[in-house]
Length: 415
Image (cartoon, rainbow, N blue to C red; front, side, top):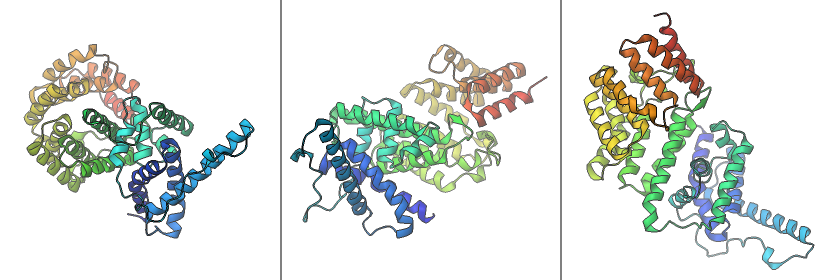
């Protein structure tokens, strides 16, 4: 890893601790978060040349406190000018740390901040953006670039999210016990969505956004460290590791998509597969069964097959049947249909797809068209398959996926 990469890891690891310390000391989550972001940017600019300080957290807290002080003074001066009044004691800046106070950043607020970012008052998009900035330590520009939106748009999204939390009176405290399991489920779903966007980008010229997938894995690893006995936390981390292990085999040199059945499996990351398999095996043995564990188990079955033809489709079908019962949703049904087609033939898979045509959650999704095209091709309906591939290509906003689908259709032209 380069020195810049090591510095980035340090900064992202310290971000929640530093923010938690400032909020506990001074309050005002919004202002503290802005100050921490400025401190992180300052460190990213200075540390490569000056070196990482002996106490990275202390350095960041000191700089962030100065930024917070400057912001409070500036805001107070602006208000005085607007109101035509003299200085008021309530305008005083944050009190600096005093001798004998506890060492900075001695409490890990990562989980508390993650729960805060996944507050039920926030939309899914706002939860993702705020999690990446507050818990992940990414800048607004980095988040905007990852999701292919203008920086100003992402800044507004984050600002609105923080404003909504402030209006709701949210504080830096763990949610009460009755809410905690729901908030954890929401937080895991946010990490799942971040990983999925990194693994298969929904739009743009690139198939993958590796930085998002890596960040989701890092954050899931932090949560697993804090909650090592939670089966679904283990399952989510295992799922990410097992899926991400295929990353280097998923795209050709020109960036074009390589489907799972055609991937060069020796390119898969064996260390990631071992780590993910161990996690899911242990969680299945010791924790109640959940959807992330089941998805990780499916990924592990794929990972265990040295060749696509060696895949244990009967086991995968059985796991999907369990998953549909515990977590029914159209994407699960879609993947279940593919597995059934591999085990029992394309007609059986197509039969499972039929109800999805009336499901508004997926009826217009390009993946339904693509899977239907694949199964029709397997069944020998080349013209029907070609039509579905072209329909899927028109609907996707991912350029690599579009090129792949158009290529599949072109191979069937005139047949």
